[in-house]
Length: 127
Image 1 (cartoon, rainbow, N blue to C red):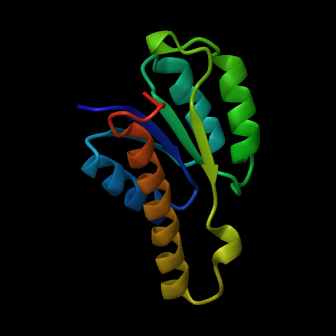
Image 2: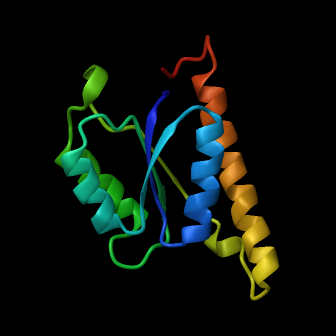
């Protein structure tokens, strides 16, 4: 199994889409539907390699989660000083059409996963 990725989004369809794409990259995905749930996961899992979070979530949003996660777990596996993270959202791209909204969210997820794949290619500066 490849990297362990914690994916956080309040939209279950986006969670499932991102998880499916990450699994194609041989990632083990851990899913959380809120920032609070994600913090609990981070507290109990010492081997999370990357945190991917939606910026626009109710309650503890992605930005606040990122700050708290890094403060909460400053030292992680493999000697990293901070938890690598990606924040993104498809929220501003959505409209009232459900099919368009899902297409937009899937396109956002695909771009996110493609960015990770590029960063993880042999010879890239990211390990």
